[in-house]
Length: 157
Image 1 (cartoon, rainbow, N blue to C red):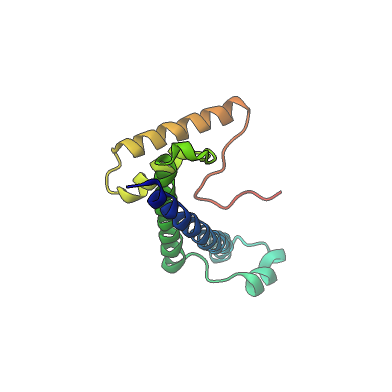
Image 2: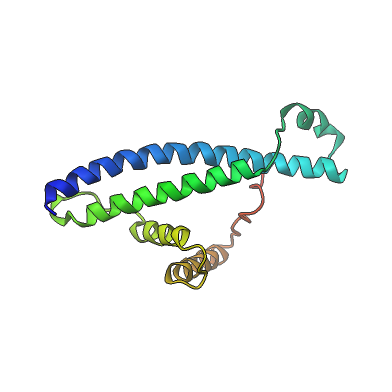
């Protein structure tokens, strides 16, 4: 293929990355709201909800976590990573165009491969991501910090 073809593809994938980024941002917001709502629902259902919060939960809390929110977030994440990987591929084919370096270039590849090959937890992308996560936790511990649990809502201020 010639450079013009790669340039056209890069422009197309740039547009798709932006569109998918918007969709992913919206889906992440819905997912986070559902996760936080689920926290309040669980407190209410367990009988541990403070009376001070009862009216807030009654008026403001939605359905909580459900399959639609989870699947939509997963699908939007998958398609964002697929588009980002395609854009990365185009940029790498145009080394003489003085395009900016893609931040976290390798992470895009690892995440895209991991989401594509989710059924193989022993694959090279999964292994590299686990190593990256270990290093991230170690760096946080060295700095005296603790990373938030990704399965729970973020702590409040």
